[in-house]
Length: 334
Image 1: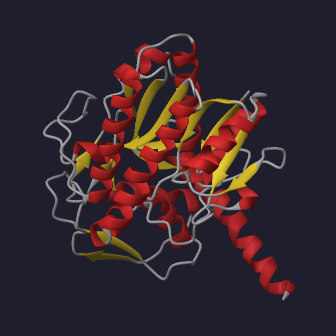
Image 2 (image 1 turned 30 degrees about the vertical axis):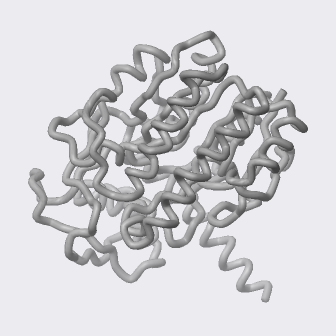
Image 3 (image 1 turned 60 degrees about the vertical axis):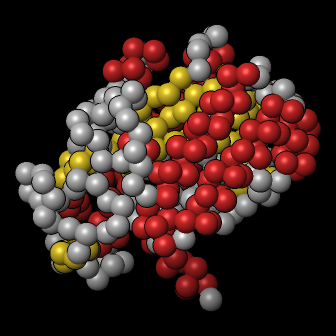
């Protein structure tokens, strides 16, 4: 029996594939490679090319690999892009997730773990924000994920499938062993962008809004190392396998950093200065979002290993250097 990872050639999914592989858990990846990379998947983990919205393909895949658990990581994740192209986001994140859930139920999958987002909360009145806070998303991205949560939760309530929604806060960093990392060149994650600026891959770094109601005027986010997020996934699967109830869990550290604090940390860790330009606010951005992780800690006894901003940045920097070296080698070979 295997574990299916949708989006397993992407940033978070590939880290999960490596972690499961290292733990001896048979896994298979389903990815259309729209934003993922074949090279990110471990060599001995099967990669099936295709869409999660293709019910016939997914049902066949589940049957062929005797899949009993699904980590559903496939999604489009840019808030600004969702504002400009809501049709794509609802189709990709909501409608396709319903098709995946339909296939999972039809083939007797037992555990379904969904990658959700803190964007479902919108602009919370209180921080840290707990799982029972009102869900009032302010972007199509957040709405598309919330709709998927509701649909899959309703399905799990009446079918023999256990379900967890993991609401990610801001995921950053890279595999400490540098087997995989955030490889998309156009990623909008602040730490990724700042590291690229430190390496000269961007001429400057933009700050989108410096007039928020925060101590320094810039947005505050709860940054979680991708490897700690993966350990929360594996802990959640163990919880469901042991008969745990359907659950929604925040995934963060319970404290945040402002945009300016992150930029100063990147400059410190990299030993490099770079230009920073202030721009207008982006649609859909929120002043501050920090996770209440008491539920995660209580149910899973989860203990993060990389809760340190400089460590997160150092791993992101090391991975970006690998990508830069690969690009230079490829250019030299032409």
